[in-house]
Amino acid sequence: MSEEQQRPAPRGSSLPCPDDPLLLILGMILRLVVEITKGSKVKYELDKKTGLIKVDRILYSSVVYPHNYGFVPRTLCEDNDPIDVLVIMQEPVLPGCFLRARAIGLMPMIDQGEKDDKIIAVCVDDPEYKHYTDIKELPPHRLSEIRRFFEDYKKNENKEVAVNDFLPSENAIEAIQYSMDLYAEYILHTLRR
Image (cartoon, rainbow, N blue to C red):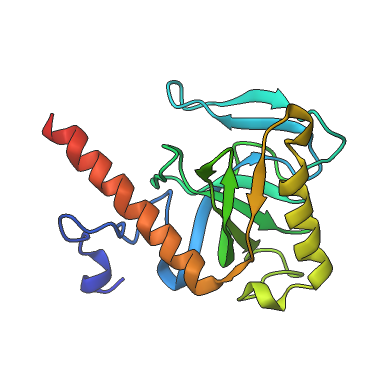
């Protein structure tokens, strides 16, 4: 490892050190935590007090998560949660597992009046999907499936969700960077107390 790679990130920078075990954006590869398994009706989420993944609820409708779903650690969004990621890959992954993924797009979403965007990613260790670099490379049916899931999964709870047009990988990277900056600000604010 070169001297430059070993040097810690400058103070106030949101980029992690290269050896950060939870988050890595070198070459735009993310390390994310899976919360919900592909094909599941169980809505899990991170319990911020214990650090464990808990059952939030069972989906009220007959839809299931079309892909593994999780979050990027050490990020923060306006909803006070880490940034959400839907990761496309062949196999379901157990909740709590880390995996490496590439952000290929952003799905802007409003959930009950609040911004709740989703990063769309592919698993870089899956030979079927690792070559995708942008959301426009995915088959239109795959995007339709993803959109429909998020439009419908809360309907039977009488909760409104609006999904906007998918955006390219550049927008996903910007959203991740912004969420890293918000997390860094939160940590600095917490340390100053």
